[in-house]
Amino acid sequence: MAVPKAGYTVGIGLTDRCNATCPHCYSRPQGEHHDMDYDELCNLFDKIPLKSVNFGTGESILYPRFIEVVEMLVQRGVEVAVTTNGSTIMDLPDDIVRLFHDVDFSLDYADPKMNDRWRGVGSYEAVMKGIDKCRRLGVEVSMVACLMSANAEYLGQLAKSATEWDLNLRVNVYKAVTSDEFRPTYEQFWSAISDMADAAYFCACSEPVVSAAIGHRNGSNGNPCGQSSFRVHPDGIIVPCVYLLSSPVTLADATENFEECLPRLSNLLDLPLPEPCRECEWKEVCQGGCASRRLLKGKAEPDEYCFIIRHDKPQINARWRESKGLVHEDYLCTMIFTG
Image (cartoon, rainbow, N blue to C red):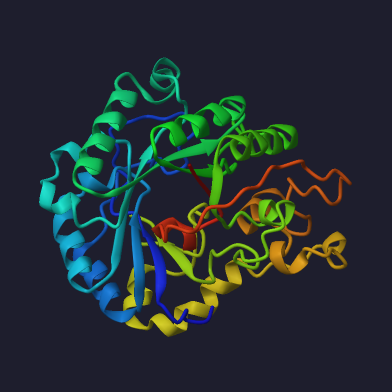
């Protein structure tokens, strides 16, 4: 892992505490809760070049020293974003919310009743109130959804709603981290992406196999995880990809000698290019697909959503708007749509 010129985009899981119990959550602790050590976190910020930081994993605003961390990063010129279910951002003072570069609100359905059945009663209203607050304060807003078997057929409507509300829609694909219960099928995956592309414009795409399908050669050359970004979990484990739950690298290691940690992080995603990919015209863009999906499914195989090996080119009406420079554009395998 070479140090990116502009600095790293780092995902920080300040806490795994959350006031929601979403069925597809992969970061819910199996035992006791964890809150990141504040002093170690400050030491990490002193040791590494930072471009941007996104707070996610649990409901980060529940972290006792959240405001202090945000203020410290902004004073250093770091772009700061937070992903939230909407319930806690109403408790933040306006002057703190204005410090965010952008805010992502978790929403998996455009229909209030369906979203509340999935994420809990009141979850839809909490998101709408949070969005209203951010827009009033002039903060860029995105909705963020997880593409799952449970909602794949409804994501086109969510993208349509995002454009009507003049919001961005960021979409991550469900990973079978602890269970494959909600893993979308090949058909669901591509149908959902086609539906979203019909309803909205791409403004960023770092999902490798999708970049290949839509001819996006300006992507991340594979996934950005471990190249320009990494994740710090609340228990102090550092991983190249948010969907990896274990790693030999810890926060304490990184604060002691960050440069020595880089090769160990890179090695976690150092996967061989699958045999079927070696002659593919898209291998430089895709590089076998999403590394975490391959690790969870089978290291030697291409991405399970590869269309080349199926001789089945998806028909996607990919239209583009200019990048908005959102923090998540450089962070993980994701797609961002806009109106």
